[in-house]
Length: 203
Image 1 (cartoon, rainbow, N blue to C red):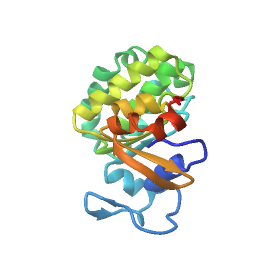
Image 2 (cartoon, one colour; image 1 turned 180 degrees about the horizontal axis):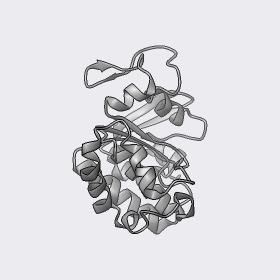
Image 3 (spheres, rainbow, N blue to C red; image 1 turned 90 degrees about the vertical axis):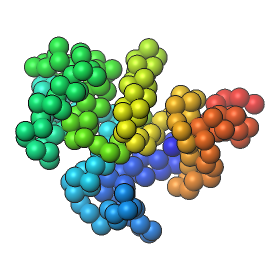
Image 4 (cartoon, rainbow, N blue to C red; image 1 turned 90 degrees about the horizontal axis):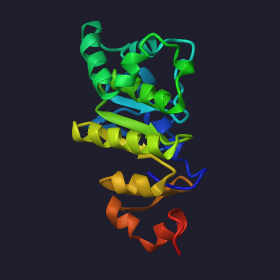
């Protein structure tokens, strides 16, 4: 999902997550209507959001942040889920007992992703995962996103870097002032003259 600042991309994710009220229409996930559910019940349905700016618990340790992500799951699942997260993000295992606020920006983004994975999402909502990261870390985060999708996690990605987002996406949507104005495969949108001019800096 791409669009200019203020296009309501984040609002869309927050509404799906149950944190913003739905003004009209309905939201269905796996044939179940979810827009009337409170946020914690939406998480139980398998919809989990990684918010813009990461929003980790800075005074808690890395381990405690991850445990918070699995709060609604069976406690017996925690060791398996932790090992999976640590296999994807080995640096988090190294920093297990370190306060999350002392991590680098890239490590904090990995922690935010890891915390979401502890809830075993079936739909992962990612809001600006590249925000504030160095290019080499952005590439790493996007490689991880691609791998998570290969493992069967459906991902709805909001991203300012339209080129990276559309290159990664199976399908893309362009949002302007709260409305979807274009939709197509990611590749086709990359080659769309309107998208090139507005979002890729090409004339």
